[in-house]
Image 1 (tube, rainbow, N blue to C red):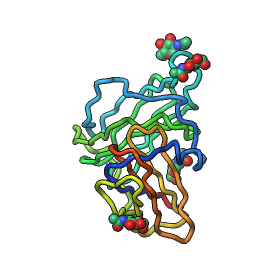
Image 2 (image 1 turned 90 degrees about the vertical axis):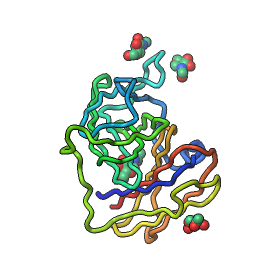
Image 3 (image 1 turned 180 degrees about the horizontal axis):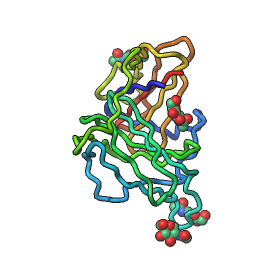
Length: 213
Ligand SMILES: *[C@@H]1O[C@H](CO)[C@@H](O)[C@H](O)[C@H]1NC(C)=O
Ligand SMILES: *[C@@H]1O[C@H](CO)[C@@H](O)[C@H](O)[C@H]1NC(C)=O
Ligand SMILES: *[C@@H]1O[C@H](CO)[C@@H](O)[C@H](O)[C@H]1NC(C)=O
Ligand SMILES: *[C@@H]1O[C@H](CO)[C@@H](O)[C@H](O)[C@H]1NC(C)=O
């Protein structure tokens, strides 16, 4: 499966409006954080960070999702990665494997695709002591997605995504800062274009990725 991503710039989606209509999994079962709360914005390649999953309701601890957990990194203009980070909620391990210079959103999901949230900021990958763990995406045959707006997108403005290459059907994955869910939308079969209507609330970053069959 090839996945490429593109960047929408500064816009915000009201997930509450579209979420239920898209058959999403349940947000707010659990939340995640770095074990070291003073984590920098710059993440060095091939460094492993501890991740903790805790119940969204720390009074009852009733729900922690269904292990194992996965980290999804969604870089602007790059290829998303999904990495297994473990099953022990207090001892999850994630290794930075995106290329140096990647600016990305991070999202943890459980084995049932239940989301654990997306922090309200982008992370930047910097060179660590080694870059040996960095995986280079497959670039042939070409499979890319481009957007017709890459800076600011006004509320209610249409955002046009165009897919080149790949094998349909295509799925568009939308992720944004401070919104707990990652949204998947199927593109109509036989089309290479997808239009997203920007549903309000400015500020924040939205990233779209497209995956094929
Ligand atoms: C946590 O669960 C308890 C018991 O079900 C409930 O009373 C409380 O409102 C919940 N707290 C949050 C923050 O949801
Ligand atoms: C819930 O989990 C937190 C963190 O692990 C812990 O400090 C707390 O005692 C737990 N609460 C209950 C009711 O088990
Ligand atoms: C969204 O689509 C991607 C790519 O096909 C897949 O890996 C992921 O599991 C899907 N997420 C949900 C919540 O369905
Ligand atoms: C972007 O594409 C959408 C969908 O095709 C279109 O409605 C919109 O006018 C385009 N915006 C710009 C700035 O070209």
